[in-house]
Image (cartoon, rainbow over all chains, first blue to last red; front, side):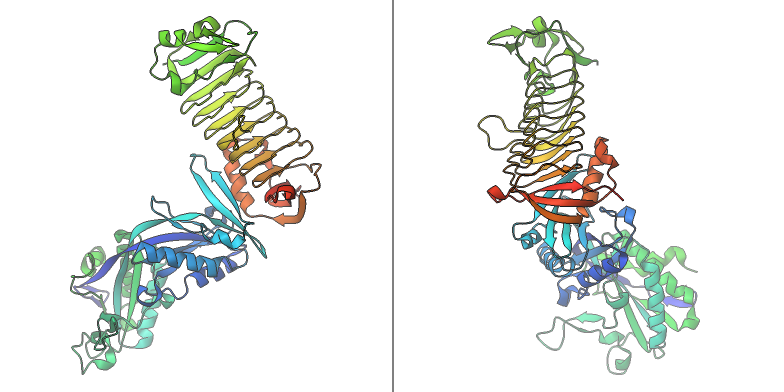
Length: 307
Length: 271
């Protein structure tokens, strides 16, 4: 398949089941909401080394947040509920509780609940206060007010935890490193507009795509040599001679459809740059379809937009 | 179906225990069954149809007409449906109310919302002492739900209250929030002496400075973001509290006499 001169490989991205949650962070202004959210989603690029994958989903205006202040919505994903709970509590305690004026609220409703402020309240050393507020539907939510040096830290007791999908991806193969990066940036800008997904790597882009296993026994994953341009002559390469740089965009999301849509708009944004931008191919990472139950087939995703 | 309506035939000399006349208890009962039910009247019993004229058949919607303060325990133990009392109610209105809505259009005697668990109780007139309190021998009063008082309340509002919300648009008497364990009480008017006496936890929201006793400590002036959530949750009840436009309060904590960590939040006027 060719779109605006860019080849779309007949392959698929292979993704896995994860557990996900959403947290709403508010603060006195967006600047401090970003400070809190950036800290909370820092060091959360891959479950391989970070425990969770997390990112900022979008900005929220004051009328979209529970306390009427500007905020951000954060998505966080892990391979299991236990890890997600542990990581959420740790990050809440170290990044949100500590951030001036920040407050945290549930961003998703589900039967499965995980702690947001439930244990964090003990930081209040007995001075913490619980408040139970009902909405017009009679649904009650518990909040904790924890006295801190800047006033009070307000935090909802729990947030929802849902089944999610992690590891949607595509690869950008370009004739130079600047060309690959410029294409990746264009894709990320378009993908940020899609709800329910995050791109957890720095700037949304990963340069060190991995394969499963290694020649070293202690390594679970190692460099994806088939896509490393400097190894073209010594490995079973996937790259043609003119490709000098490959970058990957990894997507985690709350459902299959939104991940597919984010891939579509991202790839389309790259294709809109045209062949002259230096991007030659779009491919995707998979493990032969044997590991992950969710397959994002590039031709199906881009089918309706094919030139 | 028409609302099941009990119209009081004549003024009562003694108190009538009406706890059987609620949606939960009357569900699936025929009109003749209801008419023959026995209610405690003073120290004797009498049939329902001796006291009330009965009409309608929808037990989920109950009306009391020509009601008086001699009707005790209206809506007691109710777990579903709606009840409207056109007139006054006696003591223990909404006693142990578990679910549903009760609206009293007149005044009530003491112990309204006593031991209340959930649901909504609205009193358009005044109410007596121990609103949302505990019945004799119990250590916890109201444990949930919402009570709206359009008029004034007597002494010891929310005594030993454990959870829930009481909003009073008028004044409250002495010992408001006494021995309160948790929950929220809002008084738009004034409160009497010894507010928060032996209060352990919970919030008393006031718009006028009360006369405080020694063991309530002033913790200064603050802007508290949680108030926006609280006022948002109040909005559904359409009370005077919806007019509050500030998150600025003076906070008092106590009662230090019992190592309490309850609070009075005094709403400060907007400049």
